[in-house]
Image (cartoon, rainbow, N blue to C red; front, side, top):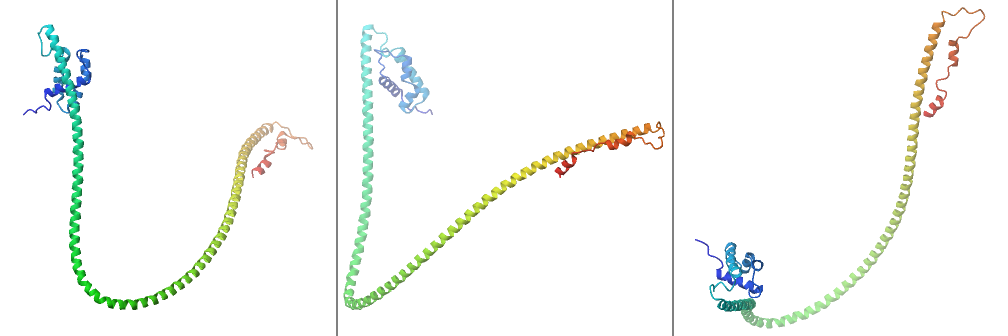
Length: 335
């Protein structure tokens, strides 16, 4: 079974004409064009104005109305093939009727909107009044029930009180006698209470003075302790400053000692290199002297008696310089 349309073609036509009238599209003075028609009336605007409807069905209806209004002319829809004079008169009559109908539709819609708003306001006011009356009625019923219950309770209490009144009158005399004796006992108790209060007040005064003295003594002791701690803190700060100075001095001395140690290590390395060179030179010289002595010994003649000739080999050790004349001070400095 097909779903029925939410709006009818008549409603669509009426709504479109109302939208054209609101947009002031007068066919007599400014004939509507497709651009103006689509600018004023669209599927989205028409569906929002109606509140329901199938977009495809609304589009088809808009195309039909556009053909009638824009392409064929609003006055030529119902009177084709007539003479020009009668057609002009009928067109003018039709335009006047359409204008009046559109004005009436707009006015009726505005009046209906105002009446609907007024009816909604009146209905809300009436609902509020009814709700207030219901609340007041419920409160009145609760109050009436409470009054009935209280009245029944009061009547029962009145009957019981009437019965008790007789007994109370009989016991009133006994109570008066007991009241007289109680007044006497109350006077005695008041005197005893006044004496006890005086004793407690005196004890409180003594305790208060003792508490003040102890508080003052503790305050004085706290002040002395605070001063002592302040002195200790000052001394500790001075000692910390002195220790920090000593630490800086020791760090400086350690850095200088480290530099001296590095310099001594460099000098020792240089001295070791010099000693190694001297030893190599001494070994070279000694080897050369040995070779010379071996080559000259066969060719040398016997020396004359009483004469001793100095050989280069004999004089070489005496002429050999010390390995490192400045090595002893450097070694002592390294040590």
